[in-house]
Amino acid sequence: MISKKFASRATSAKAIKIAAALVVAGVLAACQDSNGLRSARAYQPIPADTLALIQSKGSSKNAPILIRTYKKESELEIWKQTADGSYVHLKTYPMCRWSGQLGPKKREGDRQVPEGFYSITPAQMNPNSNYYLSFNVGYPNAYDRSKGYTGSMIMVHGDCSSAGCFSMTDEQIAEIYAIAREAFAGGQQAIQMQSMPFRMSPENLAKHRVDPNMPFWKEIKEGYDQFEVSKREPRVAVCNGRYTFGSASMNGAGCAPVQDAETSALVAERRRDQDAKVAELVANGVRPVKVVYSDGGQNPQFAHVTMVSRPEALAAGPVEIDLDDKGKPAPRTAVAKATPAATSVQPAATAVARSTAQPVAPAVPTATAFAPATPPVAVPATATAADKPFYQRWMGIADVLKADEAAPAAAPTAADTTASTPAVTPVVAPPSRPAARSSLRQPPAQQHPQQNSKVVDPRQKTSSLPGIITGAHEPLPSGVLSFAR
Image (cartoon, rainbow, N blue to C red; front, top):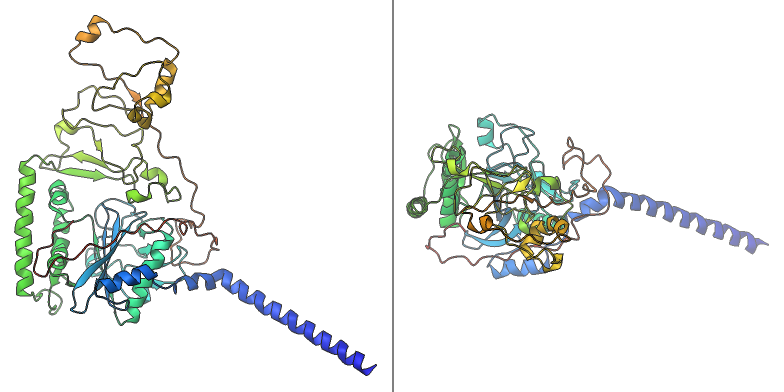
C-alpha cells in the first residue's frame, strides 16, 4: 500500500517536471521565433571560400576593411587591408536595388542614395533589422549638414528593397555584415565608405561633363583618386563646406590637409592623363548626356528577380538624353534614347528609340510605339511565330503579325520599290516586366529598417537567390597608376 502511494507521487512529480520542461521550451521557442532568430543572423560566420580568398590576398579576417559603391554600375566593393597598411580588392557584390537618380541626397523623402564619404562604426550595425541585416552608413555626415541636407537612417541592407538605401540580397548582406563584424572585432574603429555616382573613368567623366553635379563629383573624385593611386584610406575632413582630403593627417578642421609628396604626384599625373583622355573622347564626338532613371536601378545580374521594390520603375531602364555643351537637349536628339536597362528588361511603351547613325526624322511615332533604327525586315505572312527572326519575337513584333497571317501578302507596287524614303511602320512596344508581387516583408513607407515593431515573415525571400559575387581583381604593382575600371 505504501509503495503504491510513493509510486503515485513519483509519477505525479515526473509529470510536473515534463510539463515544466514543455513550458520552458515553449518560451524559448517563442523567443527564437522573434528577435532571437534575427539576432542569430548577425553571428553567421564568414563563408569558408571567402576566408580562403582573404588569406590569399595577404590579409586576415580581423583586418580593417573599406567599402566602395557605384550607383550607375550598381556594385558594392569590399577592400581588405594587408600587413603594410595598403588595401586590396576582395570582392564585388552586384547591387540588387538602389533608388533615385545620380547625384547626392539632399532632403528627407527624395529617395536619393547619398554620395560622398561616410563612416560606419560598431554602433551603426543593426542585427535586428526588418531587412534581414543592416548597418547605417552615417548620413548626414559633416559635409551634408554643412549644406543643410536632411534625411536619416540610410542603410546597407538585404531584402532587395530601396527607398534611398543600398539594397543587397539577404545572402549578400549576411556575408558583408560578417566581414564588417570581424573587422570591428579586430579593433577597427570605423569603416570608410566611399559612395560614388559611377566609376570615375574618362568615359563617364566625358559623358557627364555638363551635369550640374559635376563640381561636386570632381570634389569627391580627389579622395577617390588618392585611394586609386595609393591604395590607402584617404583622411577626410570638411572645410568651409567642401571636402578636403589628406594622405597623411588632417590639421585643425581640415583646411590644411597634409599630403604625402609621392601620393600627390601620382594624383596629379592621374588627373593629367584622364583630362587628356576626356579631351580625346570629346574630340572624337562623345556628346554629353543626362541619364534619367524612373527610380534608380539594379545590377543586370538580378534581371530575373521579380521580388524587388517598385519593379515597374525598373522596366524601362535608364534613358540617356544627348545634350549640347550648355547642358541643353541637343537639336538632333530631341527624342531620348533608351540605354540598356540595368534590369535587362525591354524598354517600356513610353520610351522611344532613335537611330545612332542618322538624325531622327521629324515624323516620330507617338509615345505608344517604337521607331525602329533600321527598316523592319519583311517576314512571310504564313510564317509561324517560331519561324520569325528572334529580334521580332523579342520586341513583340510576332504578336502584331499574327493578324496578318490569314491574309495574303500584297505584292509590292512600283511606287513602293522606287520610294526614296521607306515609310516607318509603327510597331507595338513590348510590354513592361509584369508587376511583381510585393515584398513579403516590405514595411509601410513610413517604417524604417531599424524599426522592429512589425512581425517579420519567417520566409526570407532573397535568401534563396544564388550568390552572385564576382571575384577580386589582382592589385597592380606598387607605384603603378591604377585607373578606374
